Image (cartoon, rainbow, N blue to C red; front, side, top):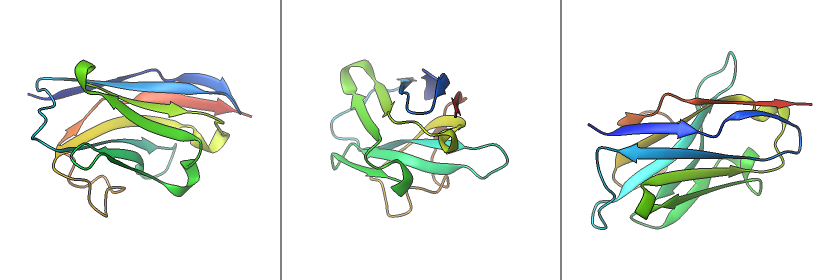
Length: 129
């Protein structure tokens, strides 16, 4: 059973930074098994939306436009951990952030939450103005 656990959320002022972590257990990243791993968020009263993904098989990353240049997704395969470094945070980044993954390559619809097999419980990020 694959489990994902997020950490690192909190409350910051606009312009601040946070780093989210997603620790995976129940499987290991084998070099021959590609995964699409990423971060989603759900702002209050809104739908869940894709933030960034890491395609391990291709070594590529994808970001939603509003976070490009501010957020960086990365992973440490030795630690089975995915990260999201968030800089220059804005009040509109306030949301519950979720880690998600599925075996395979990230496709053109990576930003939708359909098709992701594994989800964490989420970690809250609150940005005040």
